[in-house]
Image 1 (cartoon, helix red, strand yellow):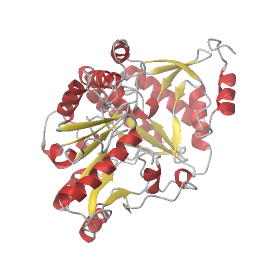
Image 2 (cartoon, one colour):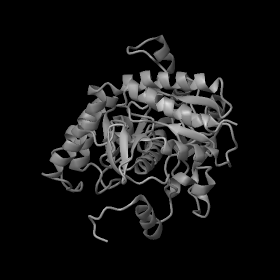
Image 3 (cartoon, rainbow, N blue to C red):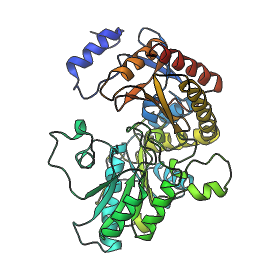
Image 4 (cartoon, rainbow, N blue to C red):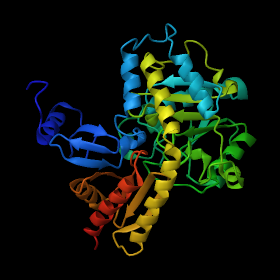
Length: 427
């Protein structure tokens, strides 16, 4: 088959099934083009994208400014490794550290790499700055977390699909219940060798589980009290997705600093970013921290051949510029409120959906069935047939996360599609 020959959906799926590892279970739709909030399959059918590549394309598919930044940089210099300086990285690091309010940035490529980096950074800080005996540092994590699928990360996961038969597992982690401030305080009080608390401000893969408004703030205060690093994994929740630049900013609906923001805002010691840092155009991730933490990393102790390459720097800078210039934080906040209001109105008279939760444009609808049922998957198949793409998570939960460039008119059209589809499954 010639490389330029057009495949049907069935042919493309068959090729992946035969020649690719079976490590994913995609919705059976074969996409060939994307623009803004829309994607098209190989037969030309148009869909609303309500997953956004797990929030990697917050800025919309193939945003022309981001794509152009990638093309222009790729024409001049793509990779030097970090054996030499390049003329893009420093400017990107200066821009991003100012954007998020940190002293230093350590560039990587994928979200899992960034989490691994944060783990190494916090352990090294504990040994060299806090005085924890070597090899005894512990990191607190939360049940139902999702931070990636490397061997170390699955070691503290309770997802058996991700863990089973991949051991032996990496020690050094203490698991507590999510959104349980007393559990965190108990561990911090009883364990003296804790290096950090690694947490998602909203647990996306767990079903967009949203904690109490003050959970992040109180967690940060406890970490400060016990000289423990507060590590925020904002790979999926960060960069405008939740109606704030970072989800650790809390559930604040105002533009300026206010009393409510004071009660909910948390400043992480270590910030982990990925996905939308590139607008979905190129693998880019980063770990940010202030000098007192980041300075424990010395030459030769951590790195990546591709991390900090010129294309990544150009793409990430433009992706962040787009978020600011197009007011995507405010748009996500406003449209997310409308989405939850409309879905809640439907739920009040529905027996197929029981709950909608989330912040900004990261939301989930809980389906009235058991986790081991196929109902949520069947609903997503029907949504596909009706022109909207979404995926289940945790069996009976459907995540809805469109690109943040969506308009109110488009959102209302999507809400109508979702409600129409859910009604087809009323019991």
